[in-house]
Length: 479
Image 1 (cartoon, one colour):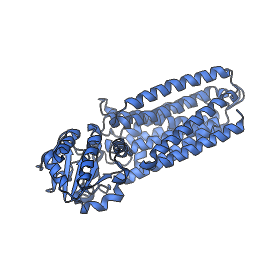
Image 2 (cartoon, one colour; image 1 turned 90 degrees about the horizontal axis):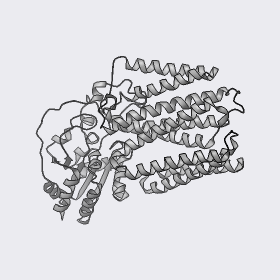
Image 3 (spheres, one colour; image 1 turned 180 degrees about the horizontal axis):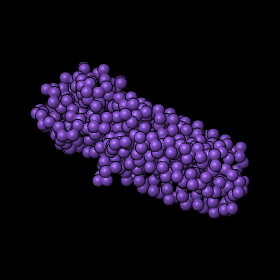
Image 4 (cartoon, one colour; image 1 turned 60 degrees about the vertical axis):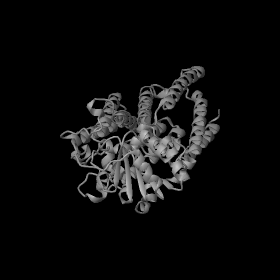
């Protein structure tokens, strides 16, 4: 395969990746976006296989292809199994796991390039020194990759919520002098990176990689569960920049383009998420620097206050007698796997002449787009699904709002309590509706650990129980 053909094929793959991002920006075009992404990756893999024989290594072409194919088979099989088995509620953990693997791959490639640069075509002979520019790229790629790996491991544990290890708990882990420690480690990494770039010292490179693994843990542990959607998006960006850095070292235009696309899109999404949560973008990416640890940790035990509760039959009566209904899905809906039952309920309400819409908060669930994917799985019509900015003005004219497993994203404290930790956070203004129905298993707080004033309003009726069971009972009552 000639270099001109390789360049053209990499360009085609890059265009496919750009079209994939464009397609994934809206639910109606997401399938097409995924198709573009798969085609682009297939072209990139085939082209890379054709490039192997040009590396000039001591390994024969057959052996090189054999190693690559074994890796593809093992990785592809593992990915297919995980994709088939993963539950919708576990999707955020899977995403965090994938980010960690990208970061670790960047570290391994950087280590291989430092130890045997001639094998990757960086230098012509083993005795040749790696150019300073390549050393800088290897330093950046390895450091970002290590931070991505260890940070993603912590994020995985926090999202999973099933590990008792302190670092994996949803509450922030804070201690005295934490920010100064982070600053010291960060400066040490920068200093070692500069020293490695100037001298090529393997010892300096090894030390900076170890410190990068450590700071990856340090910058994620002080971030509370309420900020996890931003963390997932941020780590996605880090993984992209790590790949891009390694791409420069290997002179691989495909890695540079793909990594830059992932890095820039992840950074933009992180910024959008921070705005949606009224968080400082730089505070979050720097490990919660400047945040109030007690506020981040949540409100602790809550005062017992009376609420008005009802049954699924009561809720069904209110829904069927309404002209307009807005449904606010949350993580509790995903946990109960109730999206298909909800689709059946809304279909019956629509047939009865009720105007039904879905309202999606940008950070609903545990990762960006979690609720959109959940509803798409149940084949909810896209025209019924609205983002927060598009539907907030309609709550005041809505008869009934049905909140399913959502908490912080509908908490009026963000609007009415300037002392609240979530003050200023944009919310779905469900409290403006004439009647509010809230389904939860209990009165437990959400990810932010705050009591929700919406639950105690006179217009609010709480329906306690598993979302799937409650919605199924509503369907029966509507029939």
